[in-house]
Image 1 (cartoon, rainbow, N blue to C red):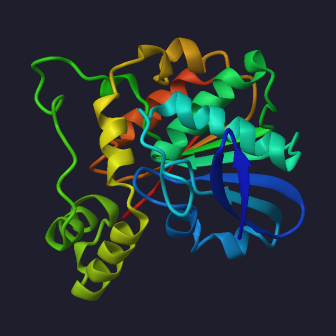
Image 2 (spheres, rainbow, N blue to C red):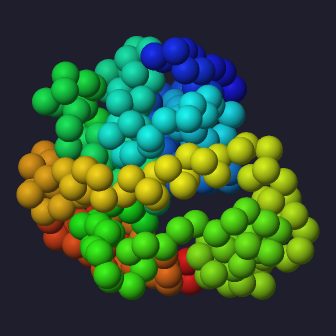
Image 3 (cartoon, rainbow, N blue to C red):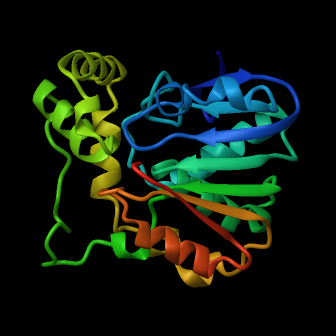
Length: 247
């Protein structure tokens, strides 16, 4: 575990293994260790794994700014340049998938390192997520952080089998959320969701990708439906589409 400074902000990241660099991006309200910790040891047998806590989350700095996908794309570019990474594979999950996809779309024009391969795991950013005034759910807000809300969120959206989530797990995750203090980041992101239509992963943007892309989805995802992934796979030339049952 280490830190680096970028644009006056301290960013935390985890680094393991040898081989070709593999950069892992976590999802909303989470951290590198929480989202990727269970698979990093296996991946580190084959790759040089770099997993940052994105700005506003985990152990990274949490400035009181307006957060959006473009914010995290810029920070990812800074992270890669700081670490001297020029050739790498990029994988992102949920919000991290949105950032990974948007970074891949914008990197070449911005003069940033371009990933060799891209993996989108239950990735957010589909145009269907654009807020529409008057449409049910468009004015949704994230729930107040509480033990009950934590357990409900884990049971409804994180695990296919709600029986996995017991009282002890809910208490542990609630304590992590309190300690990390990322609620402002999440709320800021949600408020700004419709501020820049160009950040969404639509067909015109994804059609220009010229790299191998794997799109992976849990078949029972209730938060980001598999239809999003099928669209991504159809819009990206040559993309491979894989689903995971009971997930």
